Length: 401
Image (tube, rainbow, N blue to C red; front, side, top):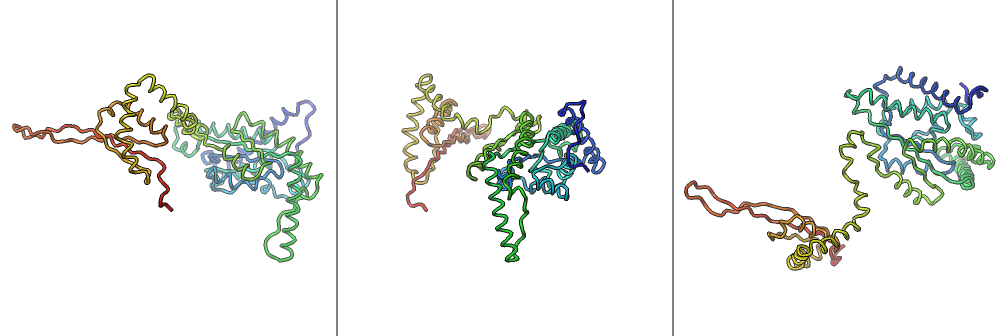
């Protein structure tokens, strides 16, 4: 097996040759997968996070955090660990990369393992333009397979593909500094293991001990891997993380980047059904501004009703609230006819919200006996409407703890 790209044809542009090679590689691997497991068993992860990063950017450090955020239970797939042949080890030690055919085949086979069906983090793929093209073809083939099974019961087990591209980035100076620092830690650890006989030695990579090789490894990332990942920005959900900051800052950036994206995760038909319901973070974002606007509209457009609601709050509700200042919770039942007006109820809730309370109103109906029909013996009842107003607020700290 060749571990380096074949020489370019003199009659075709390099980019054109790469795309054709990618097609051949992908078709060969896909055909092999269909023969081994069958088309209906080609179940790749529901969510796939492709984690790339400059050497020393902290991929290993942050992987468990990303898994926790996205509720991914399977261990990450680290491509460099999949490539364990002596030839591959030699190329990696020199800061190079192995051949695309071997990488694509190993990665696709690994992704089909059952433990990855609900989600997987793939560390170190894609790293070349050919691998990028194979990834695009995988995404398209997964969608095509869903279309083929639109009326098949297997469809529910084949969720729409959700691919995230996450890049942890540091500049060359920081990358080299971190690689060499890691090398010093590896040496100290391995010397202690050798002296005490306790623990396992860590892998020693030449790039962690030689500044020139460390810089070459960074340039390989910047010129090939980084460009390959950025080329997917318009296709998949793309996250660029500045990893030069402190760990907590980096993880906060990751958390913000991986906010829930229902439009990507749900079946299009499901998302269409619920898509008009606003996201919670959208309505919260402008909640205060909208509250102020509504209150001003009440004053200028419905002044009489608004002042009657304010008077009801001040005269009937506030005295009860004051008696519950320690608990932070008061419940008031009222039959006031004013509350039968839906706009008045909205005003009451908004006034409490502006004042720092949280009000919830529940309408309860009860049948109250009014008279007895002596001819039929029927009991004639009237409907009593009782508005139960629950008011919550931060209670007193007295005698707490």
